[in-house]
Every structure is written in C-alpha cells, then in structure tokens.
Image (cartoon, rainbow, N blue to C red; front, side, top):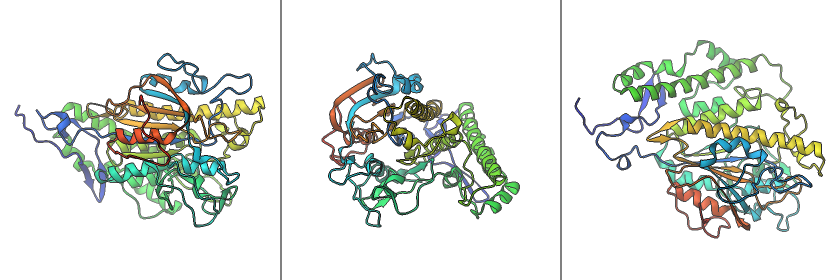
Length: 456
C-alpha cells in the first residue's frame, strides 16, 4: 500500500443531471500522515439556537408545587427536575444555567407586549421599537454575527427554521409588529430574517430545487421523479471506488439518511394532496403531526451541519406568543391561553405536557447529533446549542431567571454535567459572547452584555 498526503477536497460534491449533493466529512478528506488539526478537515464548531415560546412553567416553584425545571442543587450533584428529564441521557454534555435575564424584554415604559419583546430580544438583547408599521427596529442577532464570520466557509451562511406558520403583516402583540414574534434572527436592526417551516423548501435549499411550487404540479413531478441519489449515482459509484471501508460505511449511513428524508417529505406531500383544506391554503410537505414535522426539520439541520452547508442554525419550536394546540398529546387548548393559568392545577398540568414535548423534541436533536460521526468525533462533540426562552413565567411575563440549557462539546471547550446559578439579572448576552467565542467569533460587546460568563 502506498501512503500519500493526497486527500479528497473537504467541499466534495456528487453531481448528476444538474443535481448537486454535498458530502459529510470522510477520513479520505484528511491527508495521510498529516496532523488532523493542521488540515482543512479540522472540525468547525457549529452553533444552534432552539427557542420555545411562552416561557417554561415551573422554572421556580408554583404555589405548593416544587420547581419543575430548575434543579435544586448547584454544581455537578444536581438532579434533573421533571420537565428536564428527557435531557438526562446527555448529562455530561449539558449545562443548566440559572439567573440569566433579558432586561430589555421588559416594558421599560412601553406597556404590554412582552411576547413580542421576548422574541425580539432573545438573541439581540436590544429593546425593540414599539410599532405595527414598517419602521420596525431591534438589533443584530448573535446567530447573524456568527453567520457573517463563518458564512464565508459554507454554502449557506445560516438556516432559520420554524414549526409554525408566521403572520405576514400587521400587529401581533399589543402594538408590536408580527416581525418581532415571527423570528429570532436579525441581519440588521431593521432586517428580520423569515423562518422556513416547509421541510421541502429546506431540503431544496440544501440539495437543489424544482421548477414549480404548485402542489398539483409537484405531485405530478413526484410520480416521475427519481431520487436525488439516483441522479448522482454515476458520481457516487466512482467515489465509492476510491474510499476505504470505514468511509464507505460512513457514506452509506449518510446517504440512507438523505433517502429517508426524501421518503418522508414525499409521503407528507402525498398525504396533503388528499386532505380537504379550509380557505387558508396549507403549505405542502408539512407533516400532519407536530412531532413528525419537528423531527424532519431537525434531521435536515443535522444534514446541513454534517455536510458543512452551514454552521449556524436557529429553530423556533413555535412563534413567540403561539396559541397552537397539541392534540397529539391530548392538549386541545391553545398554548398561550394555558400559560395564563392563574394557578389552575389542570391548566398547569397541560402546560407541563407541552413543555415536556418541546424538551423531548430537543432531546431527539441532541441524540441525532451524538450519533452522527464528524471527523474524529460526532457532531455533538463539535457543536454548541442553546435551548430556552426569553420569558420565564408565562403567567406573569417575567424576563429574569430564564430557562436556559447549553449542550455540546465545542471541540473540547465545554465541560458539562453542571448547574450554574448566576446573580439575578446577569445578561443572557454574556452567554452569547461565550458561545460566539467557542466558534472562534470574538466580539467584545454585544447588546447589554457586561462580559463573558465565568465557568463556561
């Protein structure tokens, strides 16, 4: 066997009939006898931000009920509270952070509108202008600061994902524009970035688009269209002949994940074609069940990171102030309405079921990242994700002691397995400075930050 320092380019694509498919990091992309840290295959840190609306119930004790979210003990000896239990398998990769605030989510003389301010401040820390018109103003969000720095290395600077249809215009919360509740991401103070809720649209951004968005035309196309993997089969065969057994196995797992997502999107489109809809047209390719949609979008996020198509992703589990129901878990009431429970025990129990479902979906994403190889480790080893909300108590609309969890390895920079409590009103933006730095994006000041958090 002849060993050389030649390697496949990190940005290797398969092509066929106009279709392009990016590849994950393979061993063959690392030159033999070269130090891994000195090659282009050195894994980059990915940044993920997953947001839940309306706060999380039980961040502090509710009446006689102990806290359902915040651990009682600090340090490494903490026990997982009931709502956080789905994350317990990832204890060693997880930090629970208490005491953080987004002070600029408070009224500060602007009156009601806490949900709009929550959505606008979570990643910006900037108090938004109260308006329902076109003169919206917030601040550049942390994910977009990262996207500006890291996007030069990837096909897409960032992905903004969501699981609920945004409102298109007008006011959504007590004199605030819907722009503030629809997204977390702001490219500039007056430029919010829309979220994409359609898995087909996300898939096509990653793997190529079709000629028509008409549902009937798309379904006709699906009957004729072969898989994207079939289009690149000739390139795939040539590539596999050059790979070692470990790379062939890794590539097979990745391609099966792509094919599985294709199948699920096509199944959702075919199901939607048979549904008689009310006057508002339903976007195609969105599964009927919330859990199926969440998992599909999270699988797409994993593929985007695995192929290095982007290193920055935001995910809204629902719009801020969302009043969607969750019938799959037996909750027919609207989420936002239930959070104004006024200590009604039955309403509190229903809110807890919704909160737990959101955590379970996030746990699904973490598990996928942990089981996806990336370089000399996994995607979770090379990622940092923040999960939480910019409202603590949805009943009282508080913006202090926010429910925040950080998960990941950040290439060995993050030591998990701890609950850290900070003084009240410590800026959440301090944590965002930490996260940016771990992705090698260094910012001296951001929003109302006072400096990076200690012990992170």
